[in-house]
Amino acid sequence: MRLILALFLAAGPAWAERVVTPDEFHQMVTGRTLHFDRFGEAFGAEQYFEDSRVIWAFEGGQCQRGIWFANPEGQICFVYDSDPAPQCWDFIEMEDGAFHARLDGDAPSEDLVTRDVSRESLDCPLPDLGV
Figure 1 (cartoon, one colour):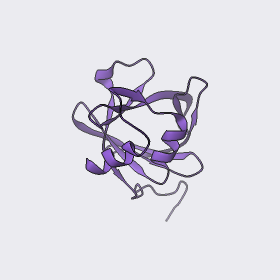
Figure 2 (tube, rainbow, N blue to C red; figure 1 turned 60 degrees about the vertical axis):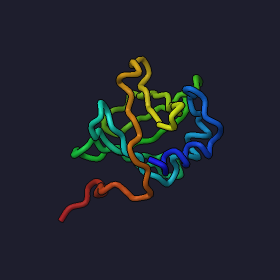
Figure 3 (cartoon, helix red, strand yellow; figure 1 turned 120 degrees about the horizontal axis):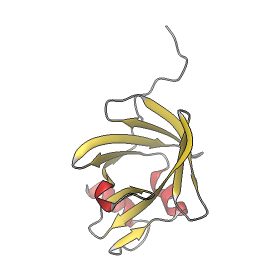
Figure 4 (cartoon, rainbow, N blue to C red; figure 1 turned 90 degrees about the vertical axis):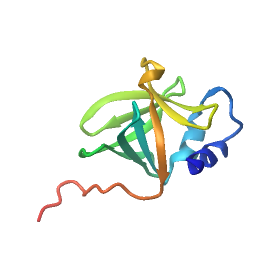
């Protein structure tokens, strides 16, 4: 947890609850994999690449490739190969240093909470690789 706190405090001072800007988000996640919990249970992980590509995997699930971008409201939106409809989120630095992701329209109780940040890749085979 200290790694998460140090990583996200480097973006600027902490407030009670502060939405991270798209530029800050880019700096914080590029080259990293974030692991998320929901309701205190492992939920999934997302790997972020330099060119705004991502790979998402639900805990124990298949990998989904996509991209992220900022919408005009400053939210971070994701589009995946499996679903072309954008999913837009606020990424929030909490007063205690925790880092939350809140889907547009969801209540705070539904937040994804960053459990771990690493530089390790997700174990996702490339598509269409056969034996």
